[in-house]
Image (cartoon, rainbow, N blue to C red; front, side):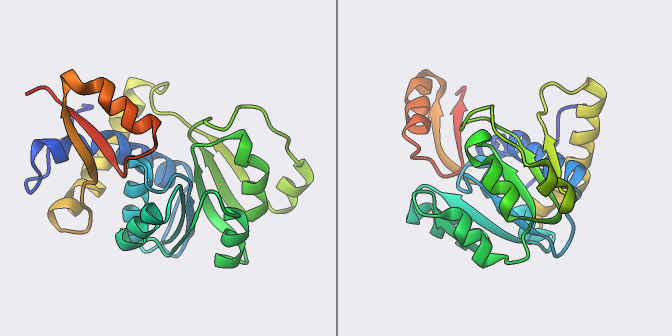
Length: 222
């Protein structure tokens, strides 16, 4: 039940780029954070596999999105995908988020963790949802409980791997019903940075470590 059908218009390399990132986005944006039409959503690491999938889903479901990324090239790529605005990570991304959404973001999808935690809450709006899906910036941080209570914010920690088989079945069923048709209808497209043979997996890791990729790197068994 964890397997999904490949959209007819995609080849197998493109199809391989879908399950992990779109399942992660569907779970965290819709099932956990309850993202709905009109919401304003922030994606840190917007040019990653998760980010490029999230930007497209936000646009497809009537939401505005803001991205942070490591270069102007990556920001421009996300804008072309449908993001409303973005800022290079070396600049003051949180000031830019405030300018983009003075009332605060409705949802923030964050793979960074502690380094961004307090500032994320500062730019999160009333009844906003912060979903933490990674700890690239550390696991320990401070929390102003008063600020959290006054703004009625929610902090959600989330992974897919630790969930039960039954829950994973539910996620993939919803993905099949709600997301996969959008590929054949032209609303979503897979973002593949490069496809490499499995024998070059070390090169694939070096590309990721250098933060060069936009979207997914695929390893082929051919």
